[in-house]
Amino acid sequence: MDLTSANMQVLFRAYNTHFQRGFAELGGDTELYRLFCTIVPSTTAVEVYPWLKELAQLREWVGDRVYHGLEAGEFFIKNRKFELSYAINRDAIEDDTYGIYGPMFAGFGRSTAEHPNALSAEMLAANPKCYDGSPLFGNHTVLDEKGKKVQVSNDIGGNGNAWYVMDLTREIKPVIFQKRRDYNFRALTNLNSESVMDSDVFKYGVDARVNAGPGLWQLAVRCNEPLNAETYEAARARLQELKGDQGRPLALRHSHTMVPSGMEGAALRVLNNVQTANGATNEWAGTSKLIHNPWLSAA
Image 1 (cartoon, rainbow, N blue to C red):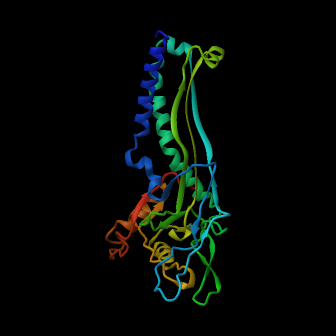
Image 2: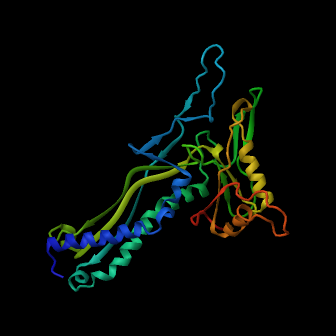
Image 3: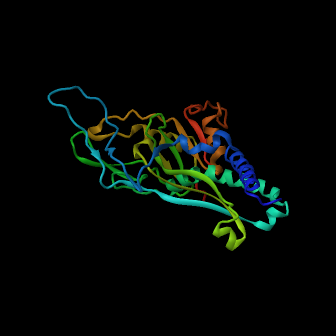
């Protein structure tokens, strides 16, 4: 291949086509994270989130209005930089072996598309502190009917792999995915550039500034027990029975159950089978949608 500026531009477009094809390879599954993440555009290095302390509801207007405060100062998510880069030797391009790199760039694109899925699952496993200073899954302080502080938990416990029941019917989700700079595929192929002159390689890379963090803890319950009808019922009840301050019901809906690969079969038996193994009616069939998330940690 003649290494002219025009040919290098054609080559970049060809590699970009492979990249974009790989990026779209999984279809809807590529954007799995969008099911349980609130997507937030970021404009600074660190975003401070003024979350409501609870899922507030309307009240009868007696006397003055009651203003719900936004809790901000302590809760923030800092953007992180990510990159994936390849270098192709100039000789490979000149000797017309550049075609072998097409599948590599397709894999490059797929890896990029999957990164938000991996990052959001990593955040769930890390279980960082959320806006109230407690871990996303754990004990949280609310006020009971008498205004007394009490502890409630959105963590069932157990020693196995984690799975989750979630209310994903709202605009706000249990996880935040924050984008400061979206994923961008670029190339350094100018024959007269200092980099190419010194190394005799052409460089291709994708980079982004993003991060994942905890959203509202009230919208998800974690369980590390084996997934069966009994534990599903317990986790579902825990989610739906969570209350806000002054004992107000939050009207949470258990809309989705998210599991790692090793629990997909158990989840299908609970959520899809009309009958149990002994022929009895399965009362939990169709009670939530299954999210099979292969990025969730497995012990």
